[in-house]
Length: 88
Image 1 (spheres, rainbow, N blue to C red):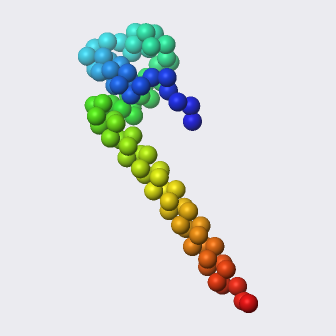
Image 2: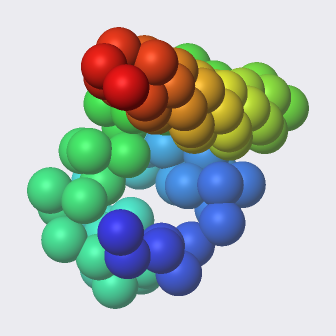
């Protein structure tokens, strides 16, 4: 997945400017992004503060770590069942 060249605080700032009445086209022109990108940002990050966004990122990384741990354990469990299930 391609990383954004904008930090979360910059994205939040752009959304806040739009909420204060600045036009989307003006913000997009200044940042050099497509309007679709801005609307995706707004859909994802609308109503969030920078601290909430940081917490969301931490929770997502922890969730990914737990999913990897579960996948490894499930694979080991399946492997052990296969080995023990075979007739010697």
